[in-house]
Length: 326
Image (cartoon, rainbow, N blue to C red; front, side, top):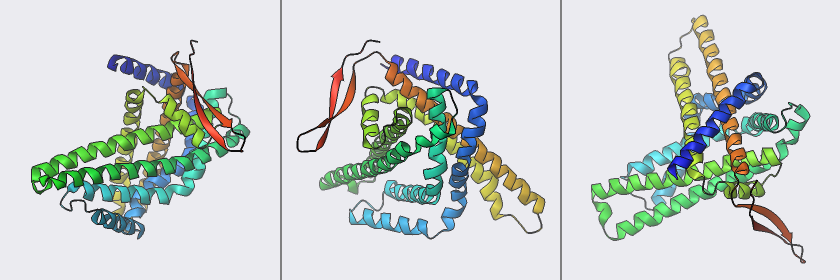
């Protein structure tokens, strides 16, 4: 199983690199430029969000929720978790206008080229509606995943606390580590499904919850491959964010008046880092698209999603098992 997953991952990575190099000029110009405002907003949020009143407000609300749920206040897990979630939510709100416009259009440009090999801007804009509806449904899916994870942690900590184990620092550390693993697994699977649902929307123009259902069916039995493909891309994006913080944000705090050339060079460096971030956003989209094509082309048992209309006018979703041997 592990050998098969590793082989599939290597094959998809090779196909992704080949496809990116084959359409290098389009991906590094049109697609990357469309993603550039989104990338810049994500990076600039590192500088603006910590000084905005939004972050402490969200952080305070999360701390209140954790205290009301009677999570152990001495656990570093919930202190770190509340702060990171607050940062993520604040940055997402700051970048939301650019996410709903330039980010989705950049993905649409990649999907359309990989499917039709024809960069037609009118067709790119036609993909925006299904991508937007899927993005909205992804938001509720991530919200449900976080709620599920916190519910599991709530019952787990209170169950262990009923036996008096949490009074021991060792047990508290063990439960915190186990909680971090459970939360990471649930959130990682939800993010993978959301990314694949966006690819389904772009490749098949089926937006909304139908794209999420198709993604859940396609991901069955391929979770390890999806994780192996998603982790490197997220690590690279996190490294670029750290580079921006080190080269631009930290220098901006020590920027003095009269250093006009230093300010210009720092701004230019920030633009170049944002462009690099955009390129890797495009690369991640290409990898997700190749993974989607691999899932569709595998000659194994698959499912067809049908909408069955009843006489009373209500529509029901039906998963029909089909044996395909291409």
